[in-house]
Amino acid sequence: MNLERLKKLLTYFEGKRNIPYRCSKGKLTCGIGWNIDANGYPANVKDNNNWTDAEINMAFLSSIYTSMTDARKYIGGACFSMIGSIRQEVLIMMVFQLGLTSLQGFVKFKKAMLENRFDDASAEMLDSQWHKDTPERCKEMAYAIKHNEYSKELLSKI
Image 1 (spheres, one colour):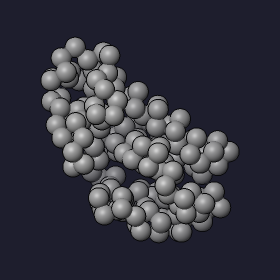
Image 2 (cartoon, one colour):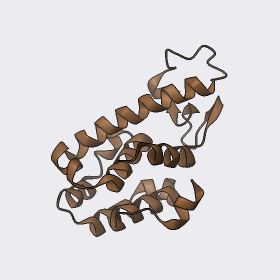
Image 3 (cartoon, rainbow, N blue to C red):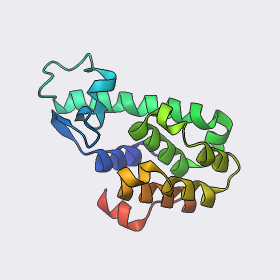
């Protein structure tokens, strides 16, 4: 897994804001995808209405590491280790955006991943509410699962 690339991809998809806002799902959010409604304010944030870049980075790294742990939990350590860094990153990004509880609803996707049927796993991603909610993001992640690489178009944007 390439942590720097993962951070760039998540920042591209999530955006970065120092001031709290309501995301498309109505959740109070700040930084790089930090869901205040679900997680509260990070302890290191001094002014809840204006986060510094250092505070954002600390919360962001905390979210990434939690997402890494949850992605491994979701698919199992052995499978996670075998699928390669691109697919690991996609699972981490899915957990980052959706949360482990929502990702656990992707039962057919998980089965396809465990059986190395990446075309089917990709198709399951595209046949989801997630795809309807965030079509560009989902399409890029499905491409990466299927081809074990990111599209040249996506890489040119980060």
